[in-house]
Image 1 (cartoon, rainbow, N blue to C red):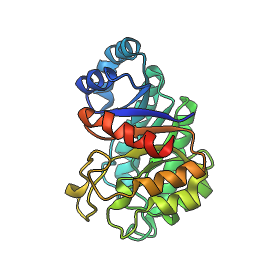
Image 2 (cartoon, helix red, strand yellow; image 1 turned 135 degrees about the vertical axis):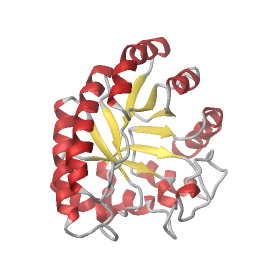
Image 3 (cartoon, rainbow, N blue to C red; image 1 turned 90 degrees about the vertical axis):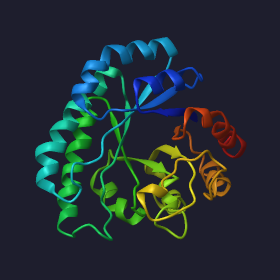
Length: 246
């Protein structure tokens, strides 16, 4: 079943998005100490708004330092997996940069090994881990998918417009569709900088959503979509999704 939900970074965001009546919220789970303190309140909000939660985990401490990742990032993630189980999170998005075009060649096998361990740790807590595309193309993810059968993907269609002449979503849908278990939608005007990741309402940028949604519809995508836009832009964004995808 296709489910459309909204993104929330804070408790206040949960109230704003929850009031819109979507079936789930994708919530930032960044600092395990903060999540632990907020857990009871978050569980109460789940009940208040009758929502499920998808998790969104923090960025890596240093994406090219395997020692930092093992000594600092991995322990943090293990705590967040346990807290996700407490919160009833069954699916979560992970940033874990493995772009083979720019990452040091010797780093990638070590990162994929660590990613495999994280996927297994998450699975033990009932969480499906979905790696999100940043600068990567499909060929960068294929090595990880081959090595880690349980690894799924969050296709961020907005990110696909950055650092690329053609939105990379077309390649992911063509070659990695069976691993796509979650989708992020937001718009932008392309570009090469972090600042170009504008998270605009669908239709306010240049992303070819009509074409991309048409491909997803032909493939019969039936899972979750998070609107990564401001709460005020969610009704119009949802209308665009339903216009082309349902």
